[in-house]
Image (cartoon, rainbow, N blue to C red):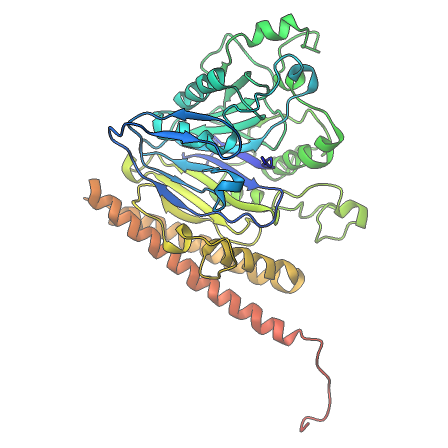
Length: 474
C-alpha cells in the first residue's frame, strides 16, 4: 500500500547562495516513525540489454535504456512492502534529483483527469529518470514524457538541479503538470501543496508544462481567477489541513530567510518564491529543515499554551527518515563539484554528513541497514541519538547544539582539504580517493557522536530519581 510522503522542500539559486552553488533540499517524511533506509550506489550500465523495472506498489513496469549513469540513492530497506523510493541522488553529469513529496490536486481538476492507478509512482520515479538525464531541464522533459505515457497514480512534486539551473515540477492530476525554474537570485520553500503561482506561457525559459493543459483548463472551466493563470488557484487546495499542516512550514522558512516580512502562518497564498534578506548558507538550510517554530508560541518545546504548541505540524519530525541537501559547486572541477549532504536520523538533532557524489561505494554502516534495531547501522544509530536528545530536551539540547556546531565547523574545513588533496587526480583514481575521503568523514562523525553519547549518558545517570540524600558515609 502506498503511504504518501509528507515532505518539506527548499530550493536556493546560485546567486542567492553565499558561495555561488545551487542547492536543492528536502526532508523525506513518512507516516511511520520507523521506515529504515540505506544509502547505496546504483551502478552504471553500459550496453546492458533487457533492463527492466517493476513497481512493488502497483502494476507499473517499463523497460529501461541499455546505458545508465552511476547514481547514489537512499531507498527503503523493506522495498517489497514499501516500494523502492530511491529518494534523492546526483548522477555522473552533476544533475540532481529529489522526489517523493506528495502534492494534492483539487477535486475539480481530478474529476476530469483522475489519477492513474497503475501509473508511474514515486517509488520508481528517480530510478527511471535520474540515470538518463543530462541537465535539470532535461529531467523535467523526461519525467513529463513518462507521465504522458504512463500517467501518475498520485500528486507529486519533484526537484531537479544542475550547476546553473533549478527546476521545481508539480504533477497534480493523472497527466497534467507544470514546472518552474527558480530565478538564480531567489529561493523557494514549500511542502505538500501546490506552490507554483502565475504561469507565463510566453516564457519557456522559466516554465514548462504538460501538453494540452491550457485547453484542459479552458474546456472544463477550471480557472477561478478573473485574470491570469495561477496554477495554485486552478489545481491546488485550500483546506484546513493546508492551514495547519502545510502553509505554516512555508511561513516559518520565510520567517527565517526574510525576518522583516510579516505574514500569517495560515495564509494559503504565501508566495512560493522570494529573495532572501541575506545570502543563504548550507547551514541555514539545515536549521530550517530541522526547525520546530523556535521563538514562536508554536514550538512544541516552547512556552506557548498547550493549544498553540500543537497547532502546526513542525518541519523537523521524528518521522523524517532522511534529510538531504544536494549541492553543485561552480568554483571547482566538475568531477568533484557535487556534494550530497545526507542526514540520517532527523535534521533537528543529527548532522548532515557531506558525501562527494563521485564515489564507488558508501560506508558499510550506511549501505547495509537492517530492518531490526542495530546500533552498527547509521540509520538506527542516529535515530537513537535523536530520540535521546528529544527525551531530555531541556538538559541535552545545548550539548546537541554544540556538537552540531562543531561538526559543521569541521565539515567546512574538511571539504576544502579533500578538494585540495584531489588536485592532479582524475578518473578512477579520483573516484577512489573521494570514496575513501567520504568514509573518513563518516568515521570522524561517529567519533564525535560517541563523545556526545557519553556526555548524555553521564547526565542521564546524574538525573536518576532513584536517589536519596543521607549521611556521606552511607
